[in-house]
Length: 82
Image 1 (cartoon, rainbow, N blue to C red):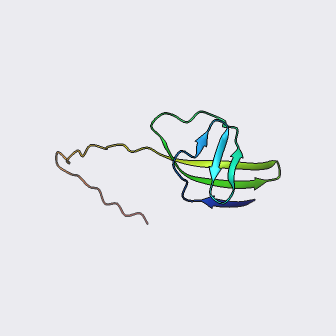
Image 2: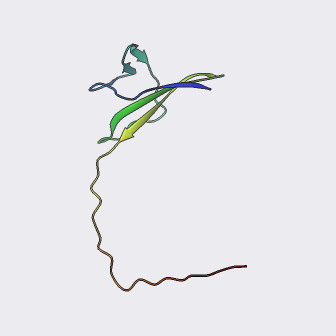
């Protein structure tokens, strides 16, 4: 398996059935599933396998995770096995 990564993609790299890659330009693409709204395309990896070339897309979604302060009394257990 041979692969290489495009770590940074420009703005709006997807357009219909095309993906714009740096130094390569627009290439044809068939998505196996739709990209959910809100996700941002941040990286593409081109992989060559025996059955052909594939593109793996890395997506990013900015979410806020609430901070929940610890509550109660912590308990611990230390066991030793021979």
